[in-house]
Image (cartoon, rainbow, N blue to C red; front, side, top):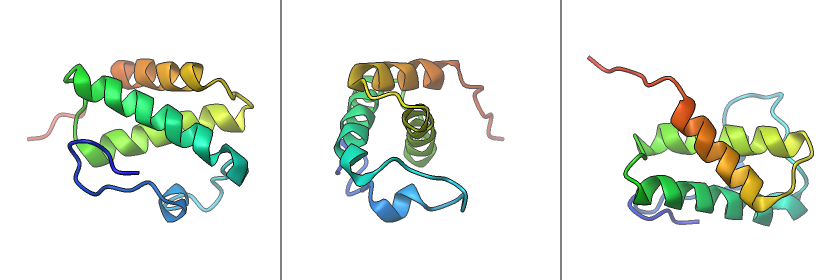
Length: 96
């Protein structure tokens, strides 16, 4: 999926498993739900000007949505809105 304002950034299966070896992701049938929820959250944050560094934001949203899906949540808007709220509440990293 190409994200507006990020060029050709793509969320792929390899991206889903990039870091933690113990990270599990819901079945492939949930990929579309995950992608839709991610796109909604990304779009809202981008349109409101709250989107920070694209890679950090993508990783944060990915982790939040995946965590909720591993807990059994399947409501698209709840997934995206919860990820948006968590992103807004996260501690901001200061760069010197």
